[in-house]
Image 1 (tube, helix red, strand yellow):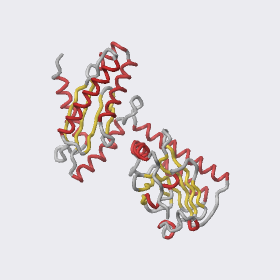
Image 2 (cartoon, helix red, strand yellow):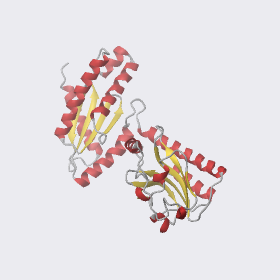
Image 3 (cartoon, one colour):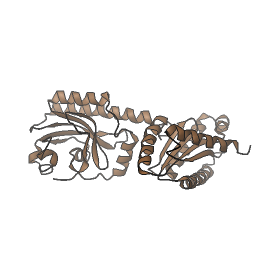
Image 4 (cartoon, rainbow, N blue to C red):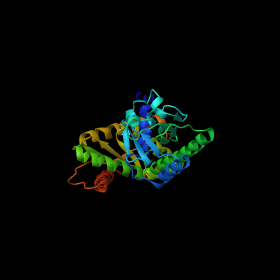
Length: 320
């Protein structure tokens, strides 16, 4: 058996996959409809929308299969995402890459596999729409085109998911995307007794920037702030624009002192960036910092409420 190679841009690919907020989500009719159609059109027992995570392939939709994931090391889809063209395996038992694969020699006894890579809007290959049969077979050119058309439909559905959780102006998570990611992070933190801190940031005098320089410049200020958030904080931290000039960061594995140090770095980075831009104004912010306490913060809303109170207190104490 040949283990799937790891793409050269794997970290970017995984980050793109994470940004969809789709892993371990509930089944959705829009994806299940596609696998039902594929299963019926090609008369195969199994059709999947499979997403290749770091160590597993997880099935957003699995028609004809009773598991929701398998190890990436034995996945056919792990091979399929290595190229832009579909992977067609007429008889896996005769293919040296798969002949002794556990999915071939045991349930579901895969013989035929056809998988079309599913690409995110940025071009990253995240998984496949694939069909599987326990009998060897071939695909004609017309059948292959139909399978590719269904894959394009799956790509469009994934793109709509990403748009629904990203802030259009800044490109970071929006309120919906933040809640989805933060809820999972807090659940994990509670189970593992992990430190988590929240920063709630509100730009100072943002209305003045809009009124003095115009709304286009105000948008540039929001984008500049979001860019500094992405530079200062870690990939594992969750950053989002909640709306208007309000931003939030959830730092996993970080105590209050870590969060405060990050805020200091952010202020310094913003100061340097504004000095270099020479735009005529400086971007500053008020920030509420709260360390997650499971016994006190029973929900994400409790944590946000505390952060908002701390932020408002700092804003009110600013010299006028």
